[in-house]
Image (tube, rainbow, N blue to C red):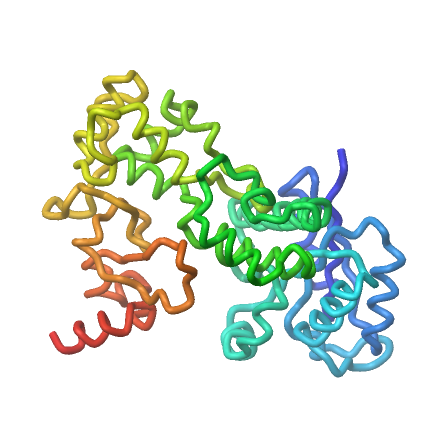
Length: 368
């Protein structure tokens, strides 16, 4: 087995040793070592160069709190990440994911307002959230997924002239606008980290080309519980995403699933125009799902013509019963995101930030 080795840079290596050990135990592929920051960033670079087996970096946000043997350093995570990214772009260092890990208070006060630094990190891990087995497992899977994704991109980026090729997309599954944007931004000639950010931000983390199991099931009208392990799940296996950054959670090519439905039920309208009960009835007629598999609505009064999920509750939703979220940073091929009416009207109850709503929606809610 080939191990995924992360080097952690933290000014309190003894204090974080326990969490690093638990992270390593959460995956049989993951190994983590830790070093304190050195007075000179170049000395950290030399340590990375000396260790040919490093798959990624895990960097604490504040590196200047505790004085080491050489005294207190004068830089923090964004500074070292910027320096390392520059060396990667010059091919003086191999392309590696850089993950920020920090405490929520420091993230809120130091990292969140510093928008330019967000492009430097592939992931942010909250140290306080690493408490139970599920949280350690999720973080470990994310670290392994990032490293494997970078390895895939390093091997294939210069050869794949189209995003569809790089993502191993089924024929016709990709939106032409995504391929066009990838070409226009010359991603095939840019650094691996640039391509990784494009894929993570605009393909993997925002639904559109790909959909999560929640959204897939909502669009098919079935509950997630009924879908898992069913003949329907098996039938849709050919449309599951297997490209870079595909290991942390299952995702499906929605256009490919739509095409499958159109062939399977060609005598019926498009799947998203049907009520959930009819979707399940058709699937049950093909012996793909149980007759009791219908997904439940958030409220009885809501429509069951689901096209997605509430972004907060992750439950099936027809946009007619929701409010649009701000899509100003979304790509043209990204799905519009919604929250249900109850979430928008009781944001404190659901820990929902109303600033995420579309500006026109916010204005209308204030007016009402």
